[in-house]
Length: 62
Image (cartoon, rainbow, N blue to C red):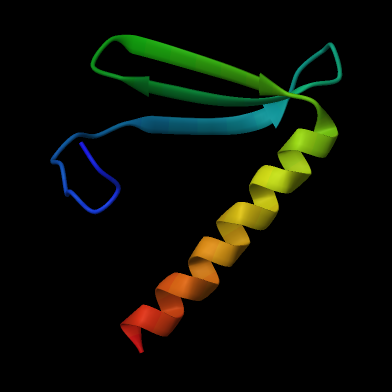
């Protein structure tokens, strides 16, 4: 599966702080749970990547 391949899969996404000072991205789909913990600096980098991807997507969409 690549980033450009569309799939008909539903998933739940939750993002929030943990009680240990980490940022958790939690994905759940079809009974599978994927918790991913990042320190705040890594979370900031991920947020910047998401913003950059959104900007690029807008440029493609026109």
